[in-house]
Image (cartoon, rainbow, N blue to C red; front, side, top):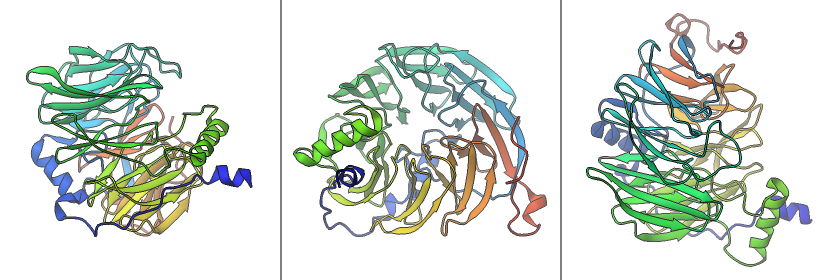
Length: 435
């Protein structure tokens, strides 16, 4: 009985909620607004848009043909950004790479000297990137991390700002950067940073670790933390608007959560929110290492619904067409109704799922630790294609080419018109593994 109690974390009671959201908060509207704000960038941020919904429309359809591959020569934990005809990505060895998107030709690479475990953010002519401790990446971190601005044309470092470890991907909106840093499990700082002039506009300090990336809708910034709380801040002032959680704050249920974390992760506090919030339909969608996936009101933080999953949730969700897509460490991938939380479909995949999915053209892409990437029909969960590489968050695109992140390399893929007209159901599941 004790095991069952620890395996199923207690939730807070759900509250009745608002109806489906305004058109101005759909993933398609958010993607269109991002395109208007930065027309020379196809995928300028982790999660594609400030709302981090991981959806951008395209005509990409499996089966695909490999156009080229880019060697990273080290683990690429987070996917590249695509802007101004360049792919830019970092590795665990501390190297930042830029290649030409059209053909994969190397443009430049620089050694930042720090562990890169996040995606950059691309602005006009400049790439912003965080690092956490010295390279190569390892579990123990010192306090030498920070944020760097790099010239996108030649890779020269324009400036550095030392803050402590940054594992979150910065959010760039106009001339403002938002990011989180941590110095320990009990000390983090959220930054609102202006670029013109370059200065810290505000800070917000938390007595917990923050490794997730900030999300934004309107002028509200959303941050999730290891203390199992979701924070909403005013993006211009840093003032706290509300704090919420799907998990209890005090009492015996909180003790059960701590014991569960201790058994699973050998740490009382190695739980809570690692994933980045995704914002759509007036809601926030977020999963925890405790295995709880939840929906909250973006306006008030009120808890709307939660689902208890058998595995931990490390990846951020993708949102499209009234559905929320997320995977768990037990290898099961889910499509939940964004309003009610009911399961539209689920599929068991080989290997743990620790990364974040991408949705485009009616398909959802997800990788597993078994080093395989799956393309599923986003409406039914049927397997449409699979690729023999991948590990974490698999895909970004520029509308014409998909860029799939393998273990230490990136593949540029295009629609294989030779096979699109061929027999239905054909995949490359039996293709030889990458070199």
